[in-house]
Amino acid sequence: MTTRSLTRSRGLHMSLLGLTASASIVAGAPAYSDDGVPDVSASCLVATEEDATVHVSSILHAGEPVHAEGSGWGPSSGTTRGFVIVTLDDGKERRPADTNLPDWVPAAVARDRSAWAVLEVGADGSFSADIAVPSTWEVGSGHQIAIGDGVTGTYVTVSVTVVDAQ
Image (cartoon, rainbow, N blue to C red):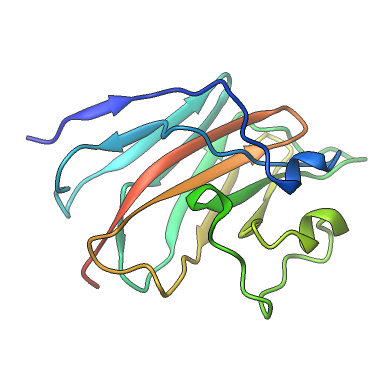
C-alpha cells in the first residue's frame, strides 16, 4: 500500500526569478509525495495552494514528458499575459542553452536558466502542457517539479519518480 503525505511550505526560497516583477517561482517542500516505491500504474497528484491547483503524474517514464494541468492561476486578460514558470529540482536543473522559451516571456525570465519552462495561462486561469524533462534523469531517481506564479506569489511543488520507459 502506498501512503501519501502532504507537506506545505509557506516560506519562500527565491531564485533570481524572484527579482522579476512579472513572474517567479519558488520551490519549497513537496506539496505531495509518494513514500516508498511507486505503483507504475498509478498516481495522479493534485497539489493545491490557495485557489491554484496542479494535476501531474507522480510517475515519469524515462525519456517522456510529464503532463501537467492547472487551474486557479493568474489569468491572461486583454492587457496582460498570465503565465507560470516551471523549475526542476529547486532550480538546480538548468535549461539547456539551445532551448528557448516563447518570445513573449520577459527577458529577465528568459535569461535565467533555472526557468526550465514557461506555460501560458488562459483567461480562465488554467493551463495544460507536456513538460519535457532532462534526459539525464535516470530510472529510479526522484525529482521535484515546481510551478509558480510570481504575480500572485502562488507556487506548488510535487515530487516525481522516473520509472522504465513504456
